[in-house]
Image 1 (tube, protein in one colour):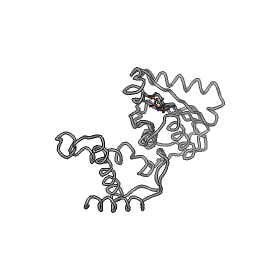
Image 2: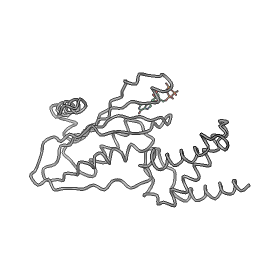
Image 3: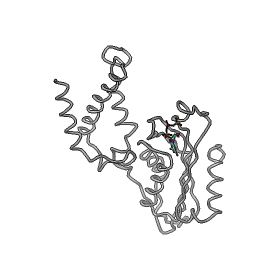
Image 4: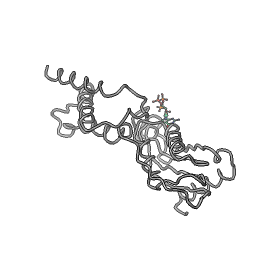
Length: 232
Ligand SMILES: Nc1nc2c(ncn2[C@@H]2O[C@H](COP(=O)(O)OP(=O)(O)OP(=O)(O)O)[C@@H](O)[C@H]2O)c(=O)[nH]1
């Protein structure tokens, strides 16, 4: 009875938070610490129910006693963290010398979670930027932070690539942009088809001049190969 009332109380406070969103969309505005705590509390109760359905005795089993709470916290603060926080602040610099050549940064670690089976997918991103001569350059570390922001959600790889690129185009208005992700999907390696751990999915998207200029695309792809081999 008490548990039932607690559940009702927690679900009311969660419903007040935000309307439901797509799995790889952020909620409107960052959650504060009390909203996060309410979400973790509500998710813990649901995970306890799941364990009960699966006949895992989490109340008495020394190994799983705190697992529902641990998993709830992991989803809110790690796996889906990018939905509940503000995007990283972008430090901008004037492109004072009018640098107009391709900048390529990577490999940037990608740690994400497949929206279909909630299994990890992981690998590397490489980003190519052709800055606008009169525009802005952004701090190099911000590319890594932006990748992590969009990866920390339930994703499919194609949409992750597009979200990263569209955000960078919107914020920095470069002449051209390329985003490439190469990743291993554990929904393929650990279950289902049980594919090779060496099998990867590579997806690349281009914007602006990089979408049109075959020479620039080839330069970007060559840099990706060199960076992955650690030879640049
Ligand atoms: N294109 C794409 N496919 C993905 C991604 N992540 C997972 N998948 C695939 O999406 C499919 C999931 O849908 P279903 O085919 O309905 O899943 P399932 O019946 O469990 O199929 P199997 O995985 O083959 O056992 C699987 O083939 C996954 O390998 C991704 O990022 N992009």
